[in-house]
Image (cartoon, rainbow, N blue to C red; front, side):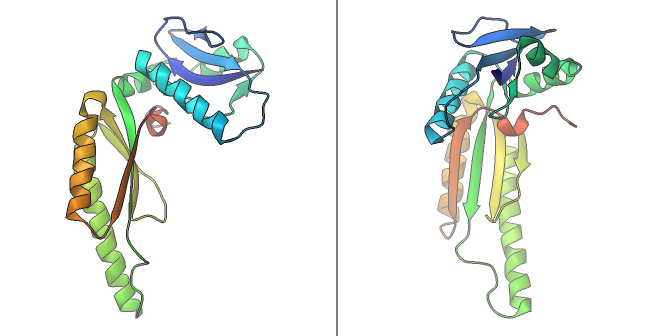
Length: 197
């Protein structure tokens, strides 16, 4: 068994025990399947490995634990999707994912139903305004469902990460009542699927 780590269009070899399985114009970066029990350390090691690979080449990370029998199965996993995956690689080339979460204290609108609706609408306006400013500083963006006021991922050019983080800090200063957290840079997990997939 082997684990699929990422898809790339860079043919440069990887350091063992990683290897690249060719699949048309793409390559699937694979590793021996991890026989150990999955724990936080294993997940962080995989994350560090993907970040190191991302420094060397554009890649689309594959979900943790995606195992196939052999190299033929690895190549088959991308067969028929080559053009779409190549397009996704073009979209993420030179960019990283930054995640932002904004949390408001308490739940909106403790009180009457009308007060609850007003507070909820105010929270949605604030979330929309925050997201709008962050989205304008990113190539692409994805809002995720969650209990937070805002939970989103932003695809940001590598050389713009500092500017994006400064924007988040500025938003935090403007909205002292919120807790705004920016994490990353990460491999582009939220943007790994081809558009329309």
